[in-house]
View 1 (cartoon, rainbow, N blue to C red):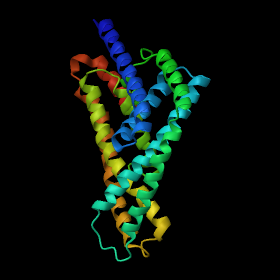
View 2: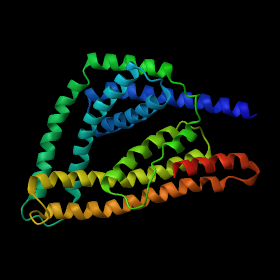
View 3: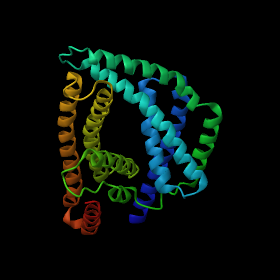
View 4: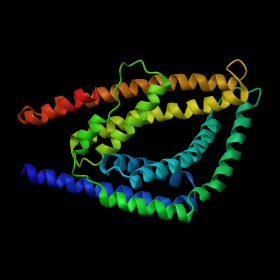
Length: 286
């Protein structure tokens, strides 16, 4: 019975992994044709998922390293487009006194850069580069060993490890990246309550951290253009919002990791061996 369950989970993990690669290839075609926010977002998230799987389940080789480098480069270029779109939308909704008209100036700067990057994104997704990328993706998909390790166990190991709840901006951003990777690994774990709870807790924290990070980057850009809080009402407003979101994001991350540690206590006593495994995972992730 246990062997059958293990085999079923391995099959599920392999199928989920193949779907990630298939979705990524689909959006490799769509982005250069139409670089709208939906295609950009889905390319980025599926690229992150694929990078996590390639790093963990594909044997290291020159091809694997080149694939990770190429995906990272494309994802970051797409990410800059996404950031510009989100930042414009945020500023348009921001209600504040702006005697110096800094908000409108920044919106116009963002709009101009967004238009330029939309025109140039096709150069990064040119046919020759995509041909090589697809070849490496297919090789990675064929070489991936999804049965080599339990994805949820691996996800626990990849959780961010906080030395204290008092994080600085750099630590929170690093924890966000680690949490994303852990979540993407847990998505391979099959249809079980523990994996679903793991994913749900991390997603809530990631959303809060993402909201903070978007405003932080906008604040940093405004400071370069207009100076500090005494020079610009816009910079002052963004700094206040960023600070509030930072505190909320830190609290959300600590709460999510605490809830994940408590997953072991939800396991029925009759399944003591599994509870021990879960407790060990939580301890290792703490």
